[in-house]
Length: 445
Ligand code: SF4
Ligand code: SF4
Image (cartoon, protein in one colour):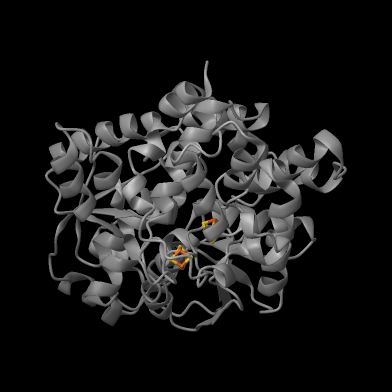
């Protein structure tokens, strides 16, 4: 294969999108926002540096298979902290996915990355994987393994995965047996009927955090939304897109579009930040597909993070649930979706929950899909800083609305022997609604 042919075939994804590179004026405003640049101090590990590398591939000055291109593109967290600070509106997230596809087609990813993406990306493998995960969690073997395995060589990744699985346990058992005042029970009947809503179940969320999906349905119903069940929905495609498998992501997006169209829902509620960001980008993902481009735009425009829906109606107050909560922003909610205050408004609806935003909450936790497993050094460094910031809050639990962040921070806390739990904001609101007796009275159980 000649160099020209390599560029023609392998650089095609980026080449076709080269106009997306043009707005970059190389000002460097994005550099201080970038966790990898801040840790490594290398321009090639900054957003501007990576855009330079993409430009070089598009212009044929650099091979997609080159070490420089693959290494620095691979080292990007995909956190998109560089996007909101960019004065030129560079669509970095889209460009990164195209660059990853280009790099992956040039040289296949490492064995561990391919294994993890295959397990999480294939429905046949995903089911048994989550079942094993739940068994390890329930039997507490995950916690035991995380506590006893050494942090060296091949054990390091296994120890981290086990700590992640252990951290998917509920923060504390919730009770629906609390006594309710007559006043609260009667309020449950006064809810205004709102939009018809479908809920994305997701793969990791449904596989390991099904309780959060159930809590999402209950909380939406308690706030007057009419929740419809959508059969045939699939993984949103986020892991595929971030990992460079854009065709896999498009296939899943088409499948979801068909499923959600049938539901005739007005809105689609998503409780996982990474999934929400991907679904809101379905229009871009399928912009070259004549059959799906418009349909993708329409579905994307109906996607909301569940906190946006609750904040837009002013969530009902629950019953007293005393606790100290440290809140951390998931990158794909804050940077990719521009949602900052809505999850805090959800937490404000939990009486007696003292909420403190973690110092540096706008920086990535180092989880970034499978990044902390495939990049243990850098992911561990970034994750370690996050865990320290969470522990400095002296909270009972950290709240963050994304399963990847919940597992990454939860694993970090657990491996440091820390007591803090991990909770989704909607899960906490659900607990306060259970204490208020909304479900018994309103029938949202
Ligand atoms: S990506 Fe945006 S902020 Fe960064 S160098 Fe380019 S124009 Fe400046
Ligand atoms: S996505 Fe995050 S890690 Fe990647 S270049 Fe942007 S700020 Fe840096």
